[in-house]
Length: 523
Image (tube, rainbow, N blue to C red; front, side, top):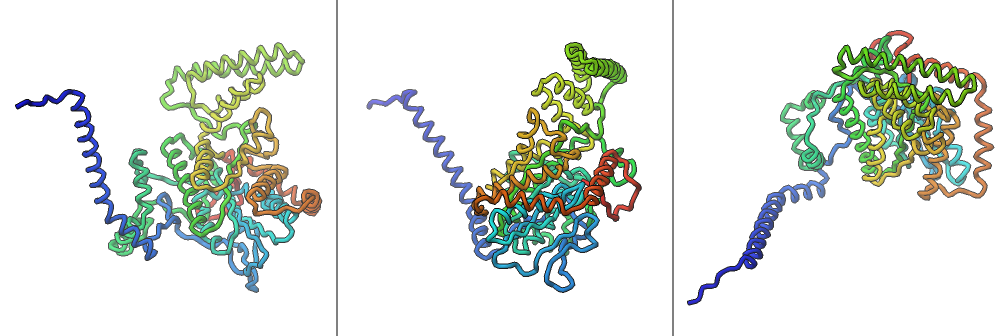
């Protein structure tokens, strides 16, 4: 009897078949294990049980939430009551929506409100003028829900409210106010990304939602805020800068910064989900801030800087300051070559200081200014951005937050109007500064008109607006008439608010107040 000897080439297919059988067996086991969950999820969807609550915030809770709009005395309109007008400006809309009305709610902070001026020159007003001129067949109603110092987590209850007022569109412009309030995130457990994503997806299933609700009922109907261990915030913003010396409360805290950014991302995602669930279109706006003409609000040396290193750093910066003063003197004397030589020497000294401490936002800004003068624009932009990102008191939207807005827009198929790019395209070397921006984040009146134009263009692109021929001339005529009707007092009050804002951002509030009080302070 002849025995067949298996060759190595025969063994390879056999081993491959075994591996495939093993993989198929494991896959079948996973499918069988998930089948009850999939069947339960399908049944709960048919019965509409356990719908995920996108309004729930695992980061913070509120001691109370009050409506932004209340019925007017005659019941014909919804309006912002006086009790909310320390943070919001008066605005209203008809209680009964007209058949030809297109209703837009704009949510955000003081930028949406039009600070340091007001709603009358906010992009919301210019947008309404644009739309009425472009498509007069409809009645366009643009409602301003911009709250002074309102961060994304305070906008969610407003969104939940206005979704009940028959909106046709929500515009969301937020990102500058996330670091204003003192809150902790010790209860937030950070998972590895490979684990976090599946956990996030599981938390949005109806089965897990029902299990969580059942658990809370077993706890005797325990308050979810207490159960989740969330900090509880008051009904209105309690900004740290509202207190004299409030700037001192800001210290370098990388974990807090990461958690604030994660909270912002979560809020944008859930507001998009809430709008989608309600079947209401949303427009996201990617915010812009002033890089070129806004120094960091607070600087701090890197942790662990030794005394001898600090002494060396200060010596280099002092010498750089002398060189910079010399450069300015030479510029006044019209000695361009000498001024450039002094500027280059200034840069060399500052770059040496940077090797000692690369976390000092003020040093980064000083370097950026010198690079800018020397027309080294790539380095200048990088340094301006670093100065903003390293600011110990972040009153300007951070880069990860800009990226989050764009990414969420792509992932959810939500249109994004990129105001940041719009302002960069109009700025020297693509670095936004005081051109069209009055301070660190607030656009000028002309800047608001630019934003309104970009929003109008997007609505035309989407086919929401069907512009009539020559509508731009009608828009310009109405806009000029509106601007002229405001009067000198309106602009004088805006200048006063701008001056107060500059003191506010330096931690020089007019006085202390109780945490439950209100303020007229930005941003």
